[in-house]
Amino acid sequence: AQSVTQPDIHITVSEGASLELRCNYSYGATPYLFWYVQSPGQGLQLLLKYFSGDTLVQGIKGFEAEFKRSQSSFNLRKPSVHWSDAAEYFCAVGAPGGFKTIFGAGTRLFVKA
Amino acid sequence: GAGVSQSPSNKVTEKGKDVELRCDPISGHTALYWYRQSLGQGLEFLIYFQGNSAPDKSGLPSDRFSAERTGGSVSTLTIQRTQQEDSAVYLCASSLRGDEKLFFGSGTQLSVL
Image (cartoon, rainbow over all chains, first blue to last red; front, side, top):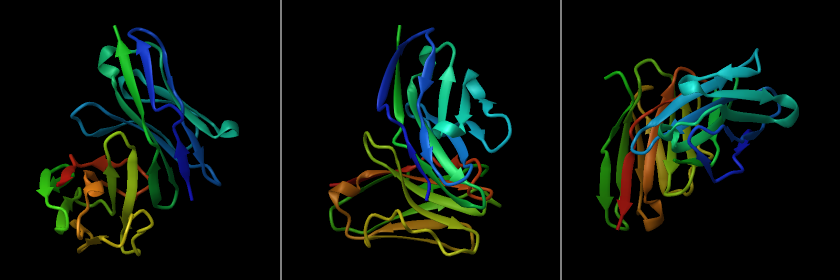
């Protein structure tokens, strides 16, 4: 069974600074990996996904994530954070073949001026 | 509609009462999930329906929780003899197969008094 860990419950960064949110997964083969964002009062929105191929994936809103098989990680990055990025971010892992998608506990991002 | 629809959006009930939460997925999506999001918690997997396969009920927290999906479309999550710890937002999501991008509903905020 797959699992996902987000080690940071919350992170605070200054506006304009770079961001990296950590995600580690457990799965016996190459999983499907996702990052979702939940803004205050909003539903969950997909930022990006990795299925196969290029290990660096680009998403919406200037986000990117890198799949590192050797570290079982799929960290989310953004070079310059905007105040509107303040939200909760969820990493998720799925598996090919129609297996269920499991979410991490989430990381809440605070952006200070 | 074009998205995942959940009803009611808010439900207030008394401890010990039964509640039913409804989810209408996107037409054509074979996979349907229920998740629970408690205050300060991540997305807790509850149950997963995929096509005609037996549902994965491994996330249901107790036998007071049950769910069904009729005709491969609408799903109902039932909580019997509600407890205060059941208070949470219950989110429904659907996807084409289950291992791909999930489309979330707006959730049902359940409050057990």
